[in-house]
Amino acid sequence: MRRAAMRGTMAIGCLLASAGCVAGKGPATPPAAVEGPCRNGGLDGFVGQKASAETGAALLKASGARTLRWGGPGMAMTMDYRPDRLTVSYDERMTIVSARCG
Image (cartoon, rainbow, N blue to C red; front, side, top):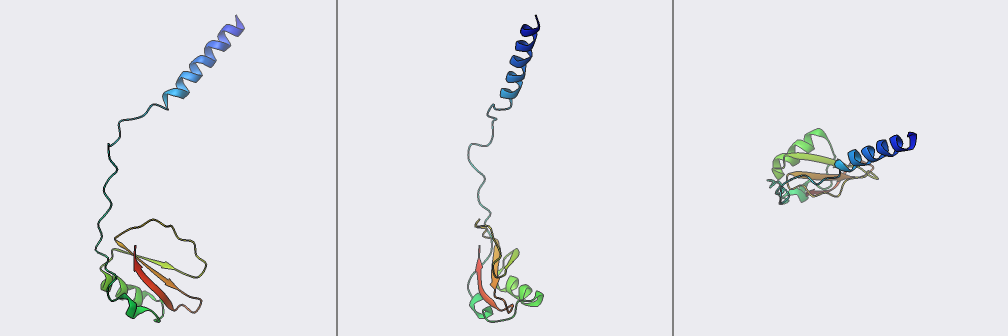
């Protein structure tokens, strides 16, 4: 009797666990990527300048980007591409070495 109850409990547990594995009805296609206003033109003029809040504001204005991401030496950054983001890298002396959209 005890084994039958245990098997029944295990069977119910397996059924409940597998119920969470059922595929849902999500969107047929992934959402479209965000189109951003970021423009690379004219950003080379900022290379060699000191990284600061003021320079960051000027970079955002010049590029038209919605967000600004600073990348210092040795910092890890995600590789995802975002067309509305400006990524600015600087060196140990806080000097901008690159500015690019994405």
